[in-house]
Length: 310
Ligand SMILES: [Fe+2]
Image 1 (cartoon, rainbow, N blue to C red):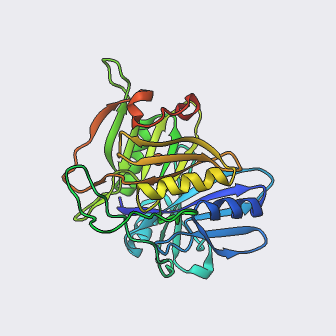
Image 2: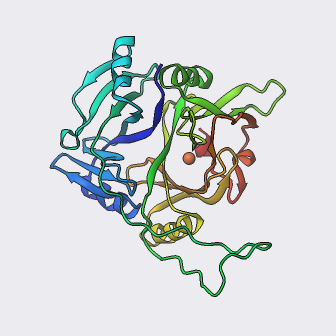
């Protein structure tokens, strides 16, 4: 087993690269490399490609990349059996890659040593005045309007036939740990979803980098990009509405992971999320069991539509 540090990238086929470019740029990503058959998009943390779109006849999710902690981890995956050495996905950004075939049919790359780009300058978090605590004195709140930079690729949610089995697989291969478990709201409390964090070791990590959600239909549920704060989620929401994109559900605050969420359907039919203020965990975190009900998904804000739960 190795311990991955987080998501590296997500991969899609799209029927129109120009449409993908316009949407993803509006969503806050930036083109880091383009050729006639694909576009790579980076994020503000310097990730050289957090999202790669290939020109294809049909739209579809192709797979995901995980960031290994060490080059040795790639060797360990190969010698243990599941990993196959591959050329770097985008050789111009360097690094090493192995590919692991997931039992649920997902392609998972594990990468290390890509050349990261300079971080983009982004605005500082806003200073909030609370009801019982004032910390912004003689200063106004002026969050910028318009496009909001995507700081980083935060998490991915996958539909799987058996959430327990998938969670065990991610745990035994990549060291992912259950952060919270969704269960049926009946007395049996059967698992229907597992929010999985990377192993935090001595640090902190996102509440979940991977969510496996039990479903009769396997496939991508969504990918999520973090933005600076709640005002950024709202500014992005207004901007994307004004650009004519299709909002699915938002803005609200999730239960598991606590993110302030905003979900969109991209021009190719995939669900994509902006979020802020998500939980982070360290090695002391103990998972809870959360009833999987529409109301249980959201602390405040709109309840997601039925399709969200399929
Ligand atoms: Fe999410």
